[in-house]
Amino acid sequence: MNKSQKEELIESILQISDRVFRELLPIVPKELLELDLTMPQLKVVLLLFLNGPLRMSVLASGLGVSLATTTGVVDRLVERGIILRESQPDDRRVVLCHLSDKGHKLTSGLWRSARDRVRMLLKAIAPPQLALLAEALESLSQAGIVTKEDAIPKTD
Image 1 (cartoon, rainbow, N blue to C red):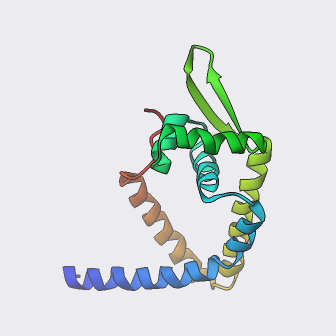
Image 2 (cartoon, rainbow, N blue to C red):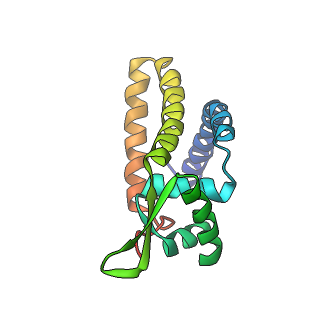
């Protein structure tokens, strides 16, 4: 396969993935609207759900805003009982944020809804194609493990 054919194949895959995402997304907006969170609040919740506990400075970096702005967003989430903020016993300057039980329940519900939608789509696929899809997704996952330049760092 030459470079031009590979580029055409990649473009075809991207077009297919666009169609798949359009199938998956209709359930998400309904779930997100029920959350009653601002976009920065949702981003903090998702960062914590996907990465586990994070320092305030790492959250600020992930959001692309100042530490003061992040503190305001986190304050409102703490007030609502969605996340917990804790100082480290060995260094009180370090503030670590993590999801509360309520926050885990909230994000797990979103994750479950999306997963159920994917399961419904996968059930419509014949077993041989499912095996190919599993192989392709594993390859994509392995490529992602190798190329995580944009990942949120766990520490400063």
